[in-house]
Length: 151
Length: 151
Length: 151
Image (cartoon, rainbow over all chains, first blue to last red; front, top):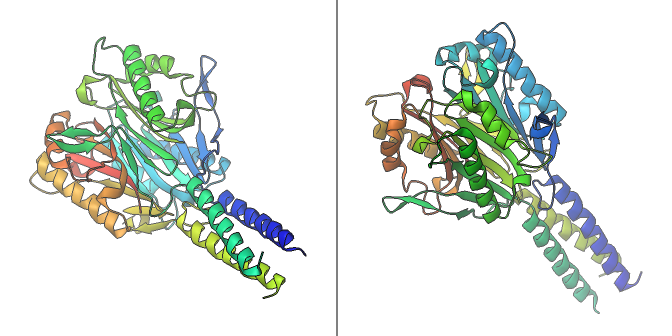
């Protein structure tokens, strides 16, 4: 093997390792986001169900829009919607880093907690909970949640 | 070329590649955030218009504080404010990952959507929308938005 | 030194550099989040005080639940809670990228600002402030804040 060949081969290896390394690191410049479940409004893209850049995943605010209009039922629906989006993006409830909970009524705080507890595994995400205006969650949902996760 | 020289040269190349690679990967430890448009309060820094770490960009909540106090006009102003901050930070509307929308009144949901749709390109960010307290957006704005984006 | 040895040694160095580099870059795929201060509800994990992935840190919404029920006192408590979580996670107030402030009453905006200003250093994070429902912050706190930071 010639020295020049060694140099070439080693640099190729280096490039290979670096590319592999960088594929794992995220987010990476010049990388483009991916999106899932685009919702349109008047035939124009409005928002996505999830966006992904590198190994970071952002899930849209999810509400419940069906009967019964009761906090435990709505919390259950919302958590399942989050889980569905997470799985579709290659993540999971256990990989959620941050959740925001918007309640229609602060009186529903306990009911929400009873369904919410344990749903994100033994190392749960951080959470911020507030009650917004009465009727302030779109579609008359009693609760809305979004999250930031990883893959 | 001596073997020792090859080693040196290759390692230098490796270092170069790694540094280049790491410059692209973000966020990176020991890196310091950058900020734009610092707002002061009583001559002391209060908040920034945007912060940047690696290729992640965070934009401050933007409101509209001028007439007409009408949702479409305010949505237009807020979206332009977001775009201005994004561009200043080297990002764009198309590179937004997550938007939070805070309405003064849930009745403005449709009017906001009509101006909002399509503004972030064909792969729109996730979005979470809630109506807060009446008058709950600082400066009497009818809507406030913030976002997380990348470069 | 044989050529093969050079190759081995250089590749080892490359691997070393890459691993070091990747250890610094974050978030990294296959990496698992860390959590601090897990709060349980009915003996089941509910949420964490902070989560960490790579060099990104997410801090839970913090409120103040003691007298005096006055905005400056509550803001002071909340900021100290944030700082405590940040330090525990290896971060600091100066390394915060984004803060969300949820007020119980928009009339407390100025009082909050007077305590808040300057607390995150000369390059402050972005901020989004809204007033939620009266009594909408859990535990009757007059203000709740969460943040995203780095290490």
